[in-house]
Length: 181
Image 1 (tube, rainbow, N blue to C red):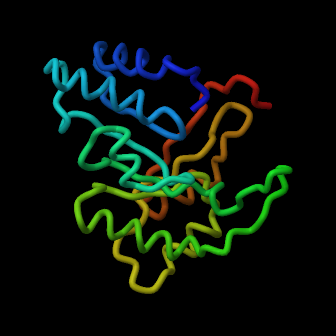
Image 2 (spheres, rainbow, N blue to C red; image 1 turned 45 degrees about the horizontal axis):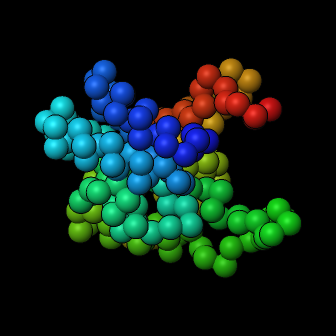
C-alpha cells in the first residue's frame, strides 16, 4: 500500500513470473495489480483459478475493487478494522455510526452470491472478534484476521486466540516497514 505510482504493476508482473500466486491488494494499488494480472492471464502465464487475491473494505465498495482488479470474485475480502474509527481532516478519530456487524452481514451476502470465496477481518482485536462470533444468525465466520505482526510487535496472544477460534492469521509488515516505528 505504500508503493510508488507505477511500481505495483511491475512488482505484480515480476511476482507472477517467478511463481507468486498470492496478492494482497489495498488502497490505490488495485488497478495496477489488476492490469498486471490481466496481462499475465492473457499471456497464459497463470490461470485465474490459480491466483489467491485479497483486498480490503476501505472507503470503497466491493464492486469497485473487482472492477479495478478486473476480476469476477475475490478469494478473500477483509473488513479493515481501522475503518471503524475514521479520522477527520485534523487526524482526530471520529466514531463511525455504522455498526461493523451490519457491514459483516453485507459481506456475508458477497459470499452467498459468489463475489467473494471467503471473508475476514483486518486489525480486529479479541473483543471485536468475540462480538462478531457472537452475532445472532452468523452465516460465515471470519476466515482470517490480517494483523500487523513483527519482531517488536509479535501479538502472540491475539494469534493464539484467533487460532483457537479456527481463524487463520496473516501478518502484514512481518519484516518491519519503512517509516513505521
